[in-house]
Length: 196
Image (tube, rainbow, N blue to C red; front, side):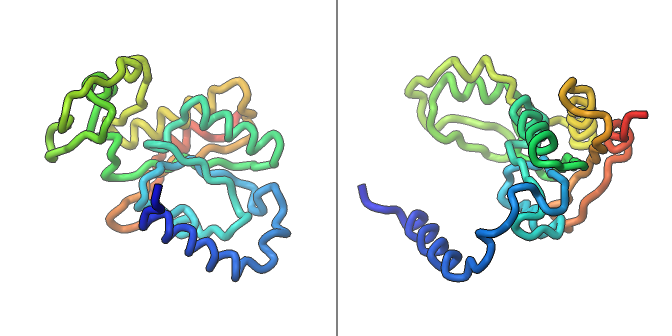
């Protein structure tokens, strides 16, 4: 197997990074600023830039949609219990790909074929139908219909989890991919307030 262009770019970039690594190897394990962000994996989002982070500052947990899945909550609980984070941010974003399909649509696409599907701006389709797997029908893909609603839902889900202490404030925001601005979702932040 020959190395791809991407592989070569990533490994070359890492060599450059290593050359200027300096004393970063001495950073402490707990995040220095004591907070965590749950956000989307979308490549347009750079939490280090939009939240003013340097290496070692905060935990950043990413998944498709920035959703409060069981695994995301597992990471947040570890972040607090073992590494001392005291505040959490749930940050979804505008123009999210998770708004472009439903669990049924992706389940059907995966049943037909496992290769990358196409999207014409309205409809998803498989270029071929070689036969896929029905396993995709049994996953809750946590798709999004309304960003403010999904942020509020996720903050409530985190707040109500039995392993999340009431002393941790959970804030809800939507990142605007057109301006870079974080827009607070008041209903989400209200739902995530410290328990009295």
